[in-house]
Image 1 (cartoon, rainbow, N blue to C red):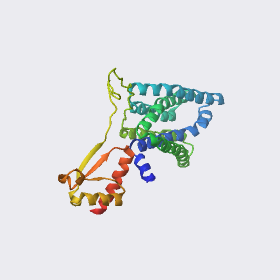
Image 2: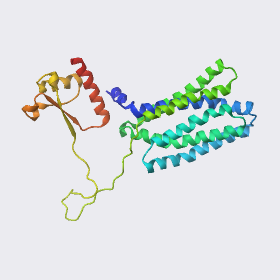
Image 3: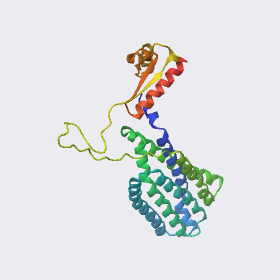
Image 4: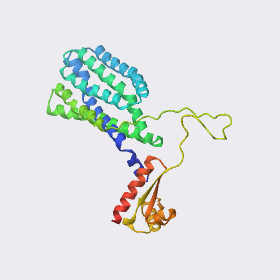
Length: 292
């Protein structure tokens, strides 16, 4: 049961953002381990300049992360900022292949980390908005696992390419564009999820009955029901509901409870979270497929 619920969560935005992170980190780690030797050995930079590059890059990323999260909250849209951040990195990083001076690498690393700063907070917020609160730990765990898998895959790909292309470090940098661009293309399938709007608490007027409220909203109550025609599986809805309960472990209500005209129908209640609904529908689909 737990495995089925996890599977229902690890799809859609969670799966796509995990793959995007894997591909992006693969591209980044194809370059990053080779950068010190390229800067010092090929471009003639000193150790101090190497430290300057990473210090400027990481400082820029940290500073921009706060701005990226703030902007995404103000505009209430995450995906454009996430896409912009990944696109800057994917287009900028491979330019190291044509760098002719150490300051070129500094500028490219600066742009790469600006992209990281722009995308990180909106991406994490979009990931959180895409799953029920009780499954956010699972979603973030999957995302971090995908990210670290990319960190392992990138150096392995770079090592393999250097075995095929000995000494051609610039070619490896250029080929790192491929997983980066694939990551950006995958973002097209990510769905924008609007963050919930915090509403002001409704006010009570003097003289209103206890519990009565006025204002812009009242908390919704109740559930959503669907009455489905089940005659394809027989006319006895009570028996069918019993068989589904024992065969699929999904509780449905026989239509006979609502009058003779609904005898061959089943009533479905959508009064739980999305993960439970997805799990119930998957169980029902498998069970009914076996009855055909």
